[in-house]
Length: 216
Length: 216
DNA sequence: ATCGGCTCGGGAAATATGCCCAAGGTAGCG
DNA sequence: CGCTACCTTGGGCATATTTCCCGAGCCGAT
Image (tube, protein in one colour):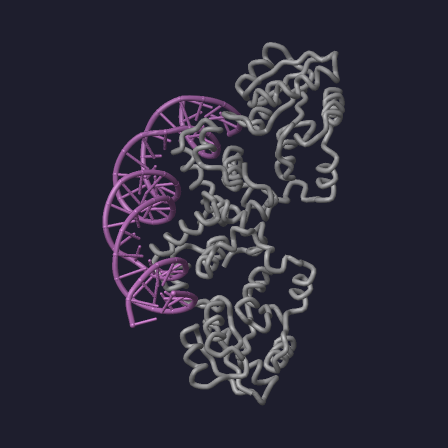
Protein backbone atom coordinates (compact mmCIF):
# COMPACT_ATOMS: atom_id res chain seq x y z
CA UNK A 1 0.00 0.00 0.00
CA UNK A 2 1.32 3.43 -0.93
CA UNK A 3 0.48 6.51 1.10
CA UNK A 4 1.44 10.09 0.39
CA UNK A 5 1.71 12.44 3.36
CA UNK A 6 1.23 16.12 2.64
CA UNK A 7 2.09 18.53 5.41
CA UNK A 8 4.24 21.61 5.42
CA UNK A 9 5.73 21.10 8.86
CA UNK A 10 8.53 18.64 8.47
CA UNK A 11 8.61 17.59 12.11
CA UNK A 12 4.94 16.93 12.24
CA UNK A 13 4.93 15.09 8.96
CA UNK A 14 7.87 12.93 9.87
CA UNK A 15 6.39 12.43 13.28
CA UNK A 16 3.33 10.69 12.04
CA UNK A 17 5.27 9.14 9.24
CA UNK A 18 7.30 7.20 11.76
CA UNK A 19 4.16 6.45 13.69
CA UNK A 20 2.56 4.96 10.64
CA UNK A 21 5.68 3.05 9.74
CA UNK A 22 5.71 1.48 13.18
CA UNK A 23 2.05 0.62 13.26
CA UNK A 24 1.58 -0.26 9.61
CA UNK A 25 4.82 -1.87 8.47
CA UNK A 26 3.49 -2.76 5.06
CA UNK A 27 2.88 0.75 3.78
CA UNK A 28 5.21 2.65 1.55
CA UNK A 29 5.29 6.26 2.59
CA UNK A 30 6.05 9.22 0.42
CA UNK A 31 5.98 12.81 1.55
CA UNK A 32 5.24 16.23 0.15
CA UNK A 33 5.51 19.57 1.88
CA UNK A 34 3.04 21.52 -0.20
CA UNK A 35 0.33 21.24 -2.80
CA UNK A 36 2.72 21.72 -5.65
CA UNK A 37 4.84 18.83 -4.56
CA UNK A 38 1.84 16.70 -3.82
CA UNK A 39 0.58 17.06 -7.37
CA UNK A 40 4.01 16.12 -8.62
CA UNK A 41 4.46 13.09 -6.38
CA UNK A 42 1.08 11.78 -7.36
CA UNK A 43 1.99 11.97 -11.01
CA UNK A 44 5.19 10.04 -10.41
CA UNK A 45 3.42 7.28 -8.61
CA UNK A 46 -0.23 6.98 -7.81
CA UNK A 47 -0.74 6.30 -4.11
CA UNK A 48 -3.64 4.43 -2.59
CA UNK A 49 -4.19 7.27 -0.17
CA UNK A 50 -3.21 10.86 0.36
CA UNK A 51 -3.13 12.20 3.90
CA UNK A 52 -3.58 15.91 3.53
CA UNK A 53 -3.06 18.81 5.90
CA UNK A 54 -5.53 21.61 5.35
CA UNK A 55 -3.22 24.49 6.12
CA UNK A 56 -0.67 24.38 3.38
CA UNK A 57 1.32 27.29 2.08
CA UNK A 58 0.63 28.18 -1.51
CA UNK A 59 -2.30 26.28 -2.88
CA UNK A 60 -4.25 25.11 0.12
CA UNK A 61 -5.10 21.57 1.06
CA UNK A 62 -8.61 22.14 -0.23
CA UNK A 63 -7.43 23.44 -3.55
CA UNK A 64 -4.83 20.72 -3.86
CA UNK A 65 -7.49 18.15 -3.20
CA UNK A 66 -9.73 19.61 -5.83
CA UNK A 67 -6.96 19.44 -8.39
CA UNK A 68 -5.93 15.96 -7.43
CA UNK A 69 -9.47 14.69 -7.73
CA UNK A 70 -9.82 16.40 -11.02
CA UNK A 71 -6.89 14.51 -12.47
CA UNK A 72 -7.55 11.28 -10.60
CA UNK A 73 -11.16 11.04 -9.52
CA UNK A 74 -10.59 7.69 -7.90
CA UNK A 75 -7.88 9.02 -5.62
CA UNK A 76 -8.63 8.79 -1.91
CA UNK A 77 -7.82 11.72 0.26
CA UNK A 78 -7.92 11.83 4.03
CA UNK A 79 -7.81 15.23 5.63
CA UNK A 80 -5.73 15.56 8.72
CA UNK A 81 -6.16 18.96 10.26
CA UNK A 82 -5.75 20.92 13.43
CA UNK A 83 -9.18 22.41 13.04
CA UNK A 84 -12.45 20.88 13.99
CA UNK A 85 -14.98 23.40 12.80
CA UNK A 86 -17.85 21.81 10.97
CA UNK A 87 -17.89 24.09 7.97
CA UNK A 88 -14.30 23.18 7.28
CA UNK A 89 -15.14 19.53 7.46
CA UNK A 90 -17.93 20.10 5.01
CA UNK A 91 -15.64 21.98 2.71
CA UNK A 92 -13.20 19.11 2.76
CA UNK A 93 -15.87 16.58 1.95
CA UNK A 94 -17.25 18.87 -0.73
CA UNK A 95 -13.99 18.97 -2.60
CA UNK A 96 -13.85 15.22 -2.55
CA UNK A 97 -12.11 14.08 0.59
CA UNK A 98 -13.07 10.65 1.78
CA UNK A 99 -12.14 11.21 5.39
CA UNK A 100 -11.47 13.85 8.00
CA UNK A 101 -9.40 13.55 11.11
CA UNK A 102 -8.11 16.10 13.59
CA UNK A 103 -4.61 16.10 14.89
CA UNK A 104 -5.93 15.47 18.35
CA UNK A 105 -6.65 11.92 17.42
CA UNK A 106 -4.72 9.07 18.92
CA UNK A 107 -2.26 7.12 16.76
CA UNK A 108 -4.63 4.17 16.82
CA UNK A 109 -7.39 6.24 15.34
CA UNK A 110 -5.06 7.55 12.69
CA UNK A 111 -4.09 4.05 11.73
CA UNK A 112 -7.67 2.98 11.66
CA UNK A 113 -8.61 5.96 9.50
CA UNK A 114 -5.77 5.31 7.11
CA UNK A 115 -6.76 1.68 6.73
CA UNK A 116 -10.39 2.40 6.15
CA UNK A 117 -9.98 5.29 3.78
CA UNK A 118 -7.28 3.49 1.81
CA UNK A 119 -9.80 0.71 1.40
CA UNK A 120 -12.26 3.18 0.01
CA UNK A 121 -14.47 3.63 3.06
CA UNK A 122 -15.26 7.03 4.38
CA UNK A 123 -13.84 7.86 7.77
CA UNK A 124 -14.82 10.90 9.73
CA UNK A 125 -13.67 11.41 13.25
CA UNK A 126 -16.31 10.20 15.64
CA UNK A 127 -17.13 13.47 17.25
CA UNK A 128 -17.26 15.41 14.03
CA UNK A 129 -19.37 12.78 12.36
CA UNK A 130 -21.86 12.99 15.17
CA UNK A 131 -21.99 16.72 14.96
CA UNK A 132 -22.39 16.62 11.22
CA UNK A 133 -25.20 14.17 11.61
CA UNK A 134 -26.95 16.20 14.26
CA UNK A 135 -26.48 19.37 12.35
CA UNK A 136 -28.55 18.88 9.26
CA UNK A 137 -27.20 22.12 7.98
CA UNK A 138 -26.00 19.89 5.21
CA UNK A 139 -25.10 22.20 2.40
CA UNK A 140 -26.84 25.37 3.36
CA UNK A 141 -25.87 25.77 6.99
CA UNK A 142 -23.64 28.66 6.26
CA UNK A 143 -24.81 32.16 5.94
CA UNK A 144 -25.91 32.52 2.32
CA UNK A 145 -23.38 35.28 1.93
CA UNK A 146 -20.57 32.88 2.68
CA UNK A 147 -21.39 30.85 -0.35
CA UNK A 148 -20.70 33.84 -2.50
CA UNK A 149 -17.06 33.48 -1.64
CA UNK A 150 -14.68 31.62 -3.86
CA UNK A 151 -12.41 29.01 -2.38
CA UNK A 152 -9.55 31.39 -2.05
CA UNK A 153 -11.69 34.08 -0.56
CA UNK A 154 -13.09 31.66 1.97
CA UNK A 155 -9.65 30.58 3.08
CA UNK A 156 -8.67 34.16 3.58
CA UNK A 157 -11.90 34.87 5.36
CA UNK A 158 -11.21 32.11 7.84
CA UNK A 159 -7.67 33.18 8.51
CA UNK A 160 -8.73 36.76 9.00
CA UNK A 161 -11.41 35.69 11.41
CA UNK A 162 -8.91 33.66 13.36
CA UNK A 163 -6.86 36.76 13.86
CA UNK A 164 -3.71 35.71 12.12
CA UNK A 165 -1.52 38.69 11.42
CA UNK A 166 -1.83 39.81 7.80
CA UNK A 167 1.82 39.22 7.00
CA UNK A 168 1.56 35.68 8.23
CA UNK A 169 -1.47 35.02 6.10
CA UNK A 170 0.20 36.44 3.05
CA UNK A 171 3.26 34.40 3.78
CA UNK A 172 1.34 31.22 4.32
CA UNK A 173 -0.54 31.69 1.09
CA UNK A 174 2.50 32.91 -0.78
CA UNK A 175 0.87 36.07 -1.96
CA UNK A 176 1.88 39.64 -1.43
CA UNK A 177 0.49 41.58 1.48
CA UNK A 178 -1.02 43.79 -1.12
CA UNK A 179 -3.01 41.03 -2.70
CA UNK A 180 -4.18 39.90 0.68
CA UNK A 181 -5.34 43.38 1.43
CA UNK A 182 -7.22 43.48 -1.84
CA UNK A 183 -8.86 40.18 -1.04
CA UNK A 184 -9.83 41.46 2.31
CA UNK A 185 -11.71 44.32 0.74
CA UNK A 186 -13.27 41.98 -1.76
CA UNK A 187 -14.44 39.60 0.93
CA UNK A 188 -15.91 42.38 3.00
CA UNK A 189 -17.80 43.60 -0.01
CA UNK A 190 -19.18 40.19 -0.79
CA UNK A 191 -20.22 39.67 2.79
CA UNK A 192 -21.66 43.14 2.94
CA UNK A 193 -19.82 44.07 6.06
CA UNK A 194 -17.79 47.09 6.93
CA UNK A 195 -15.27 46.02 9.48
CA UNK A 196 -12.99 43.26 10.63
CA UNK A 197 -15.09 43.02 13.71
CA UNK A 198 -18.25 42.14 11.84
CA UNK A 199 -16.23 39.64 9.90
CA UNK A 200 -15.33 37.89 13.12
CA UNK A 201 -18.92 37.96 14.33
CA UNK A 202 -20.10 36.42 11.11
CA UNK A 203 -17.41 33.78 11.20
CA UNK A 204 -18.30 32.80 14.72
CA UNK A 205 -22.01 32.88 13.99
CA UNK A 206 -21.61 30.46 11.15
CA UNK A 207 -19.32 28.23 13.12
CA UNK A 208 -16.36 28.78 10.87
CA UNK A 209 -14.19 29.69 13.79
CA UNK A 210 -14.53 28.92 17.43
CA UNK A 211 -13.77 31.08 20.41
CA UNK A 212 -11.93 30.14 23.53
CA UNK A 213 -8.66 28.98 22.11
CA UNK A 214 -6.13 31.68 21.60
CA UNK A 215 -5.28 32.24 17.97
CA UNK A 216 -2.04 30.61 16.95
CA UNK B 1 -43.63 58.59 43.94
CA UNK B 2 -41.21 60.36 41.64
CA UNK B 3 -39.36 58.52 38.91
CA UNK B 4 -36.74 59.86 36.54
CA UNK B 5 -36.39 58.15 33.17
CA UNK B 6 -33.01 58.48 31.48
CA UNK B 7 -32.80 57.36 27.88
CA UNK B 8 -31.44 59.06 24.83
CA UNK B 9 -34.05 57.79 22.41
CA UNK B 10 -37.07 59.96 22.80
CA UNK B 11 -39.52 57.49 21.30
CA UNK B 12 -38.37 54.68 23.48
CA UNK B 13 -38.31 56.81 26.57
CA UNK B 14 -41.75 58.22 25.96
CA UNK B 15 -42.95 54.81 25.05
CA UNK B 16 -42.32 53.33 28.41
CA UNK B 17 -43.17 56.58 30.06
CA UNK B 18 -46.71 56.24 28.81
CA UNK B 19 -46.68 52.60 29.75
CA UNK B 20 -45.73 53.43 33.28
CA UNK B 21 -48.26 56.23 33.46
CA UNK B 22 -50.98 53.82 32.44
CA UNK B 23 -49.97 51.07 34.80
CA UNK B 24 -48.82 53.17 37.71
CA UNK B 25 -51.08 56.24 37.78
CA UNK B 26 -49.62 57.55 40.99
CA UNK B 27 -46.10 58.15 39.83
CA UNK B 28 -44.72 61.47 38.74
CA UNK B 29 -42.43 61.00 35.77
CA UNK B 30 -39.54 63.16 34.78
CA UNK B 31 -37.26 62.52 31.84
CA UNK B 32 -33.68 63.11 30.84
CA UNK B 33 -32.01 62.30 27.56
CA UNK B 34 -28.44 61.99 28.77
CA UNK B 35 -26.24 61.78 31.82
CA UNK B 36 -25.72 65.48 31.98
CA UNK B 37 -29.41 66.16 32.12
CA UNK B 38 -29.98 63.36 34.56
CA UNK B 39 -27.55 64.87 37.03
CA UNK B 40 -29.29 68.17 36.65
CA UNK B 41 -32.82 66.85 37.05
CA UNK B 42 -31.84 64.98 40.16
CA UNK B 43 -30.49 68.14 41.69
CA UNK B 44 -33.71 69.97 40.99
CA UNK B 45 -35.82 67.32 42.59
CA UNK B 46 -34.72 64.08 44.14
CA UNK B 47 -36.65 61.15 42.69
CA UNK B 48 -37.40 57.90 44.44
CA UNK B 49 -36.04 55.99 41.50
CA UNK B 50 -33.97 56.53 38.39
CA UNK B 51 -34.56 54.25 35.43
CA UNK B 52 -31.33 54.34 33.50
CA UNK B 53 -30.40 53.26 30.02
CA UNK B 54 -26.86 51.98 29.78
CA UNK B 55 -26.07 53.27 26.33
CA UNK B 56 -26.11 57.00 26.72
CA UNK B 57 -24.21 59.48 24.59
CA UNK B 58 -21.57 61.43 26.46
CA UNK B 59 -21.13 60.14 29.96
CA UNK B 60 -22.47 56.63 29.92
CA UNK B 61 -25.18 55.19 32.08
CA UNK B 62 -22.57 53.54 34.22
CA UNK B 63 -20.65 56.72 34.75
CA UNK B 64 -23.79 58.70 35.35
CA UNK B 65 -24.82 56.19 37.95
CA UNK B 66 -21.49 56.42 39.68
CA UNK B 67 -21.77 60.16 39.88
CA UNK B 68 -25.36 60.12 41.04
CA UNK B 69 -24.55 57.64 43.78
CA UNK B 70 -21.62 59.72 44.79
CA UNK B 71 -23.80 62.75 45.39
CA UNK B 72 -26.80 60.85 46.68
CA UNK B 73 -25.81 57.47 48.04
CA UNK B 74 -29.36 56.62 48.94
CA UNK B 75 -30.59 57.10 45.39
CA UNK B 76 -32.06 54.00 43.76
CA UNK B 77 -31.14 53.26 40.21
CA UNK B 78 -32.68 50.64 38.00
CA UNK B 79 -30.83 49.78 34.83
CA UNK B 80 -32.93 49.24 31.79
CA UNK B 81 -30.83 48.06 28.93
CA UNK B 82 -30.92 46.31 25.60
CA UNK B 83 -27.99 44.16 26.59
CA UNK B 84 -28.09 41.03 28.64
CA UNK B 85 -24.45 40.14 28.96
CA UNK B 86 -23.53 39.17 32.48
CA UNK B 87 -20.42 41.31 32.79
CA UNK B 88 -22.49 44.36 32.00
CA UNK B 89 -24.97 43.42 34.65
CA UNK B 90 -22.13 43.05 37.11
CA UNK B 91 -20.74 46.40 36.11
CA UNK B 92 -24.10 47.99 36.70
CA UNK B 93 -24.44 46.47 40.14
CA UNK B 94 -20.86 47.40 40.92
CA UNK B 95 -21.47 51.06 40.33
CA UNK B 96 -24.43 50.96 42.64
CA UNK B 97 -27.49 50.02 40.65
CA UNK B 98 -30.21 48.33 42.64
CA UNK B 99 -31.81 46.59 39.69
CA UNK B 100 -31.26 45.45 36.15
CA UNK B 101 -33.82 44.82 33.49
CA UNK B 102 -33.57 44.22 29.78
CA UNK B 103 -35.79 45.88 27.27
CA UNK B 104 -37.18 42.51 26.29
CA UNK B 105 -39.14 42.44 29.50
CA UNK B 106 -42.88 42.69 29.48
CA UNK B 107 -44.56 45.85 30.75
CA UNK B 108 -45.73 43.94 33.78
CA UNK B 109 -42.22 43.03 34.69
CA UNK B 110 -41.12 46.61 34.24
CA UNK B 111 -43.84 47.80 36.57
CA UNK B 112 -42.96 45.16 39.09
CA UNK B 113 -39.28 46.10 38.89
CA UNK B 114 -40.04 49.77 39.30
CA UNK B 115 -42.18 49.13 42.33
CA UNK B 116 -39.69 46.91 44.02
CA UNK B 117 -36.62 48.98 43.36
CA UNK B 118 -38.37 52.18 44.29
CA UNK B 119 -39.16 50.49 47.58
CA UNK B 120 -35.48 49.76 48.03
CA UNK B 121 -35.48 46.11 47.09
CA UNK B 122 -33.09 44.79 44.52
CA UNK B 123 -34.63 43.56 41.31
CA UNK B 124 -32.72 41.66 38.70
CA UNK B 125 -34.42 40.13 35.74
CA UNK B 126 -35.22 36.51 36.44
CA UNK B 127 -33.02 35.00 33.81
CA UNK B 128 -30.06 37.19 34.51
CA UNK B 129 -30.35 36.62 38.22
CA UNK B 130 -30.27 32.90 37.67
CA UNK B 131 -27.27 33.15 35.46
CA UNK B 132 -25.50 35.38 37.89
CA UNK B 133 -26.24 32.93 40.63
CA UNK B 134 -25.07 29.96 38.63
CA UNK B 135 -22.02 31.75 37.45
CA UNK B 136 -20.01 32.29 40.58
CA UNK B 137 -17.64 34.32 38.53
CA UNK B 138 -18.60 36.94 41.03
CA UNK B 139 -15.99 39.60 40.71
CA UNK B 140 -13.24 37.80 38.90
CA UNK B 141 -15.10 36.14 36.09
CA UNK B 142 -13.58 38.41 33.57
CA UNK B 143 -10.23 37.91 32.09
CA UNK B 144 -7.82 39.50 34.56
CA UNK B 145 -6.65 41.75 31.78
CA UNK B 146 -10.11 43.25 31.52
CA UNK B 147 -9.90 44.54 35.03
CA UNK B 148 -6.94 46.65 34.07
CA UNK B 149 -9.27 48.78 32.02
CA UNK B 150 -10.75 51.95 33.37
CA UNK B 151 -14.45 52.56 33.04
CA UNK B 152 -14.06 54.59 29.92
CA UNK B 153 -11.70 52.11 28.37
CA UNK B 154 -14.09 49.29 29.09
CA UNK B 155 -16.96 51.10 27.45
CA UNK B 156 -14.88 51.66 24.38
CA UNK B 157 -13.70 48.08 24.44
CA UNK B 158 -17.26 46.85 24.41
CA UNK B 159 -18.30 49.10 21.58
CA UNK B 160 -15.31 48.14 19.54
CA UNK B 161 -16.04 44.48 20.09
CA UNK B 162 -19.62 44.99 19.00
CA UNK B 163 -18.36 46.34 15.74
CA UNK B 164 -19.75 49.81 15.89
CA UNK B 165 -18.08 52.02 13.32
CA UNK B 166 -15.40 54.23 14.88
CA UNK B 167 -17.12 57.44 13.92
CA UNK B 168 -20.30 56.30 15.56
CA UNK B 169 -18.50 55.42 18.75
CA UNK B 170 -16.75 58.74 18.83
CA UNK B 171 -20.00 60.48 18.18
CA UNK B 172 -21.89 58.55 20.82
CA UNK B 173 -19.22 59.30 23.39
CA UNK B 174 -18.78 62.85 22.23
CA UNK B 175 -15.08 62.55 21.74
CA UNK B 176 -12.96 63.11 18.67
CA UNK B 177 -12.16 60.23 16.38
CA UNK B 178 -8.58 60.81 17.33
CA UNK B 179 -9.19 60.28 20.99
CA UNK B 180 -11.09 57.16 20.24
CA UNK B 181 -8.20 55.92 18.18
CA UNK B 182 -5.84 56.64 21.01
CA UNK B 183 -8.05 54.75 23.40
CA UNK B 184 -8.13 51.90 21.04
CA UNK B 185 -4.38 51.64 21.07
CA UNK B 186 -4.37 52.00 24.82
CA UNK B 187 -6.91 49.25 25.28
CA UNK B 188 -5.07 46.91 23.00
CA UNK B 189 -1.90 47.51 24.94
CA UNK B 190 -3.56 46.86 28.26
CA UNK B 191 -5.15 43.69 26.94
CA UNK B 192 -1.91 42.67 25.33
CA UNK B 193 -3.45 42.02 21.98
CA UNK B 194 -2.43 43.07 18.54
CA UNK B 195 -5.56 43.25 16.46
CA UNK B 196 -9.22 44.09 16.44
CA UNK B 197 -9.90 40.48 15.78
CA UNK B 198 -8.27 39.30 18.99
CA UNK B 199 -10.19 42.00 20.76
CA UNK B 200 -13.43 40.51 19.54
CA UNK B 201 -12.34 37.00 20.50
CA UNK B 202 -11.47 38.16 23.97
CA UNK B 203 -14.73 40.01 24.33
CA UNK B 204 -16.72 36.99 23.31
CA UNK B 205 -14.66 34.68 25.48
CA UNK B 206 -15.35 36.76 28.53
CA UNK B 207 -19.00 37.09 27.71
CA UNK B 208 -18.87 40.81 27.26
CA UNK B 209 -20.50 40.55 23.91
CA UNK B 210 -22.62 37.85 22.43
CA UNK B 211 -22.76 36.62 18.89
CA UNK B 212 -25.83 35.94 16.85
CA UNK B 213 -27.43 39.33 16.87
CA UNK B 214 -26.30 41.61 14.16
CA UNK B 215 -24.54 44.64 15.45
CA UNK B 216 -26.71 47.70 15.38
C1' DA C 1 -11.53 32.08 -30.29
C1' DT C 2 -13.74 34.94 -27.17
C1' DC C 3 -15.84 35.80 -22.84
C1' DG C 4 -16.16 35.70 -18.03
C1' DG C 5 -14.49 34.66 -13.64
C1' DC C 6 -10.59 33.90 -10.46
C1' DT C 7 -6.06 35.02 -8.85
C1' DC C 8 -2.56 38.12 -8.38
C1' DG C 9 -0.57 42.63 -7.78
C1' DG C 10 0.69 47.90 -8.90
C1' DG C 11 -0.43 52.94 -7.90
C1' DA C 12 -2.57 56.77 -5.59
C1' DA C 13 -5.46 58.61 -2.21
C1' DA C 14 -7.93 58.14 1.97
C1' DT C 15 -7.96 56.18 6.66
C1' DA C 16 -6.42 54.21 10.63
C1' DT C 17 -2.76 53.31 14.01
C1' DG C 18 1.19 53.79 17.02
C1' DC C 19 3.73 56.66 19.74
C1' DC C 20 4.83 60.88 22.10
C1' DC C 21 3.46 64.72 24.34
C1' DA C 22 0.49 68.19 26.89
C1' DA C 23 -3.42 70.41 29.10
C1' DG C 24 -7.34 70.17 32.25
C1' DG C 25 -9.83 67.63 35.87
C1' DT C 26 -10.15 65.12 40.09
C1' DA C 27 -8.85 62.30 43.93
C1' DG C 28 -5.85 61.36 47.69
C1' DC C 29 -2.27 62.78 50.85
C1' DG C 30 1.06 64.97 53.90
C1' DC D 1 -2.99 73.96 50.56
C1' DG D 2 0.23 72.34 47.38
C1' DC D 3 1.73 67.76 45.34
C1' DT D 4 1.49 63.71 42.99
C1' DA D 5 -1.00 60.33 40.39
C1' DC D 6 -4.13 59.11 37.13
C1' DC D 7 -7.86 59.66 33.83
C1' DT D 8 -9.69 61.89 29.86
C1' DT D 9 -9.14 64.42 26.02
C1' DG D 10 -6.75 65.54 21.69
C1' DG D 11 -2.76 67.42 18.52
C1' DG D 12 1.31 66.07 15.55
C1' DC D 13 3.67 63.06 12.71
C1' DA D 14 5.40 58.84 10.81
C1' DT D 15 3.89 54.47 9.31
C1' DA D 16 0.66 50.88 8.07
C1' DT D 17 -3.65 49.50 6.16
C1' DT D 18 -7.56 50.04 3.23
C1' DT D 19 -9.93 51.47 -0.63
C1' DC D 20 -10.63 52.03 -5.40
C1' DC D 21 -9.18 51.44 -10.02
C1' DC D 22 -6.80 49.07 -13.28
C1' DG D 23 -4.27 45.44 -15.94
C1' DA D 24 -2.13 40.75 -16.68
C1' DG D 25 -2.20 35.82 -16.79
C1' DC D 26 -4.95 31.56 -16.47
C1' DC D 27 -8.52 28.45 -17.16
C1' DG D 28 -12.88 26.72 -18.29
C1' DA D 29 -17.05 27.25 -21.04
C1' DT D 30 -19.65 28.56 -25.11
